[in-house]
Image (tube, rainbow, N blue to C red):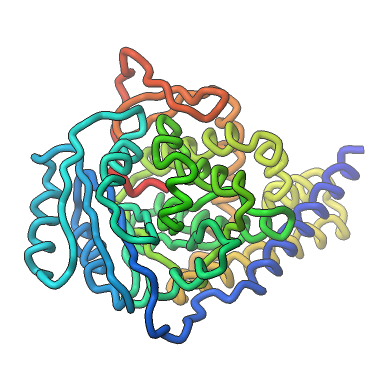
Length: 393
């Protein structure tokens, strides 16, 4: 009976992996649009906290946007003494032709500091389209011009974009790179092929300013950890469609060791489990390494070993192909085995999501309530900060 059960689970994981691969193959990734003559005015909101060696280049990419319309760039920071202020002021001075300003957002308006900053930037919005981008995101010069036209359709309420981890500089980050560059975007497309999208992807999100106003502004996202998910929920509740741009953003993270990446993964897992508990529970069926390995260990027959081998080869091959498509690079091809490591570690991450509701975020501990809101844990436990700013997806 055990062998039969594992054979069925292996078959299910293979079907789901094939489905995910086909959904990804059909998406027009990296397809550029012809430059339009003009586009509606765009306000870019950039919440900032802390900086590293990549911060200046990431921010500079937004000053270099070739957008056929007026652009307003609002850089928000909670502390005037934050070292990122010097970087922001230098860029503002270096691009006098760009309508950009640094806004100090001193008030603390809830547990989610990013949303607190967005709420204080909101009164300064002057244009009809609003683009929200994390601090660690770098984009091409034609990025905004490729995203904004999707909102010409009045039925579209929000545009997401996929993102890639651009600098997996440690072994632990290479594990995370498989999760982001190979699996995450394909899982999103798999979900889209099953049901209407009702979530946002936090790296870059764009929506009409009128839509933001109708949902009550950023106040509606106060205290939620997954503010991107909640923004998508608000848009979907207005019966508007959520689309995906074909252009891809880059995320440049500070170097992280195993502890930092583990904290990342566990926080995301617990957040997703709270937001979407049933799909998250059954997501273990999508693990295309776990079930074939268990089948091979339990059965030992040539047929079972052959089936397990086919599944594992397909998993490694599609992971490499999906990562190459997103990153437009083949430098990862010699690390084909990382897909198996990632899948097996995912079992522990998946289990950890059911072991409590507490997370570590920016050096503090929070409890995720049943509705997805954050509650600060007092007194904070002694936990290692992973030095994250607002580049958290």
